[in-house]
Length: 285
Image: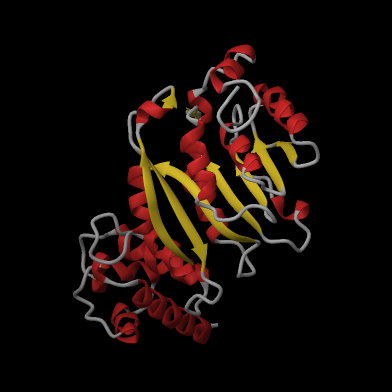
């Protein structure tokens, strides 16, 4: 038995179901139930919550979420080999675990939620983690269908998510993340906690959506950030030429010097430039 429930230890589950981690699926199983419980607790009280989990694998985090009282867990798992192991957890917690055998990059869970806002809690597969996050941050309309996200990433990606101006890791991902959410790295997890151990340290990140981000068109913001950071060593007056408008007009709208570089511009500065880009392009049509 484990420390959190009367189900078998995860190593036994993996052996019995022959769940060797597959690199092609970005799998690294977290077997320490103390750590999975810590991740689950980071999402706040779960008793009245529906939780979306992506990539549950043998179900370590799934068990922690249910043991802590989650009203409902929707586990999205692409690997068919893991479904029998998850079914055993569903039997232990009748009516509270819904297993969806699907690819999370294309599956939209909103149809399963009705009007309820969920929490997303997941040890994301490394190979799709950033794409999933960008998708969740790009949903429309906003505010989104989730109320918080507690997600695990490679430490390098986590640093990019929370980075702000003048940070070495600051870039397009930091602009989008911090425009639409409050971000924070909560704690790190050593490679030795996983099977197989990855080559990098992992970090758990919490993102709380801003109910009313600074107003601008998301697509315009993404275009400005892409142009600015696409040539991050160059000044804005050069890098923003890729947008087909006068870079000086964008910089002036943000109250910044066009000789600055992208990494020195705040999220608010990018928002102001995006609004100006929208104005200019709208005037042309």
